[in-house]
Length: 229
Image 1: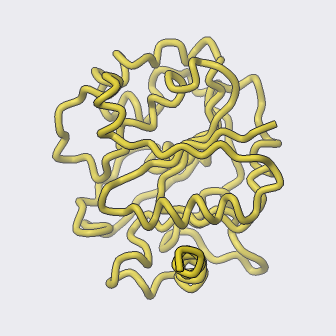
Image 2 (image 1 turned 90 degrees about the horizontal axis):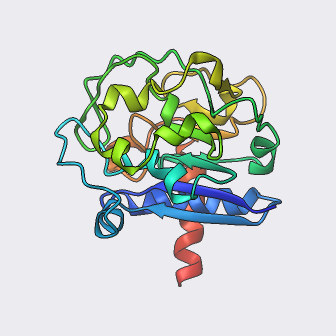
């Protein structure tokens, strides 16, 4: 089985995408099909037509909800923000898929206190914040049929990021280790989180090189440089 993975891509953070992709491949026992969700390309295909949103902190704020459309509403796929570093085999995560659910995610209760994140982007607080930063999509689930390109281009941010097209019983829960929030979740007593999420800002920004697990991210980034050399 190939694991289909869609990674949010932002023109300001290509290095974050590259490191996320590398960390997935480095640990995976499954063949991976990795796709960069590039807003410009999706716009050129006519799939993304939203006007610029001043509150959108990344270029993939909304494009993640096109995953069912991009898979032709077939099978399972994963979406993940680019600001992740994976330390474990993604096959473990895909082994948790449950056909009862339309989506599966970590059910965070995240209430950040910072007013800014990343490169000065506004930090907003809303219900189910960061639930949509890593999603296992059951693309074929009938409840996701409503989420066609027209819906993604017209529905509100709240409707999309809070999974408001779904009743709660169709939103499955994943273990928190797969979306461990740097600066919010406590470091585990042993081992590493399986998915480290630099949601406030990551080591690709000079001012964020002090954060937990920055050394691991920088080590992975260095393998990109050495391979290119």
